[in-house]
Length: 107
Ligand SMILES: [Zn+2]
Image (cartoon, rainbow, N blue to C red; front, side, top):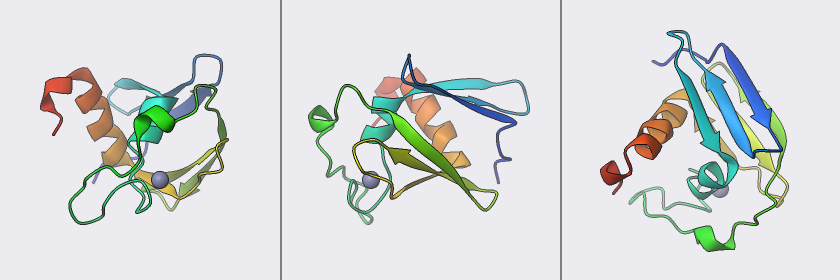
């Protein structure tokens, strides 16, 4: 299981969420990317993994209104578009960062 990040910072000006991990790895994930990859059942088909949300409908002035830790394994992101049901596990963040670094690996 992935350990929790040692530090999480939200840069609202740059719309980037920065996660710092134990092994001094730092991942920077743009808000709109995270919002588009929201794993909740409204945004993504639970069974097929197919995205339901149309990324073009994500507002450009997207902001994080809150972050709520879920146990020690995930973070709930609260967006200013009223959406707050996305729980991102640490594994999930790492996977999204890897996928962002290597977009050819996306499905
Ligand atoms: Zn969602």
